[in-house]
Image (cartoon, rainbow, N blue to C red; front, top):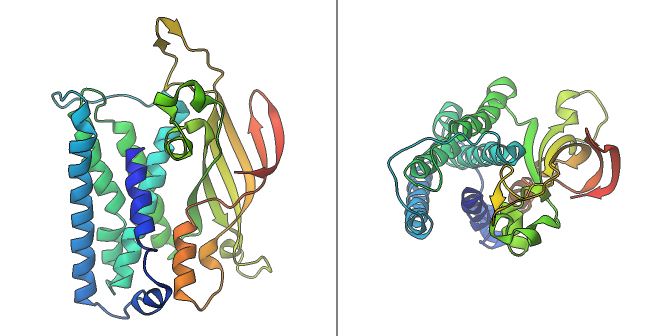
Length: 301
């Protein structure tokens, strides 16, 4: 989840300017703008380097170091942590490609150097995990990172647009209070750490698949996945007693809004929409589980 914190901070830095600055500054260049490209490379390299140094000094320093080792954590958290890697890699790759597009870099280089931003950064973090006794290098995480990058690149090669977007939603649950050390203490920590309240969505734009239809261009259909009843990665013993868990997988069907497809002449608003398009818009949803059958939510976060 520390990786997700870095990503969210990166996104919201981009909305700290004034509206007038956005209108003039964020217009993509029609041809290669070396000054913009160099600024992007320097900014991304510096931010990534400082983030990795910060993780090393402020996070990993609190845990014993070890020789490089691997860890098989594929069965933990009903694979919710793996979807977190897919989501982060996809979104960082999207940001990387978009800022190179703003610099006027050709499409091929956007995909090679921009969309791989998430995979490259998360690989560096994974290597650091490998030298920490608390964790370890996870091939499952690496596959998830590659899947997120592949989802972005594949759509650009196939359709030249993102018809299917990865999104995230969250609601607070009762489980964090039972294990705040694992699941977070307070809304912000729980937003990042409580897998019980997280849902990851594949949000598909209807109009992009049926271009001759009368569907609104912003309307999406979303399929979500979540988990419930998790107090630990797997069943584990705490204070000499087994934690009781009723772990279930949850699947969702809902509507969504692709904010990036809402028409506006304001580049400021388009930037705001693009930033917040990572969040699934609350809508009624159908929930499917193998234990509880089908359940209707009036509004689901």
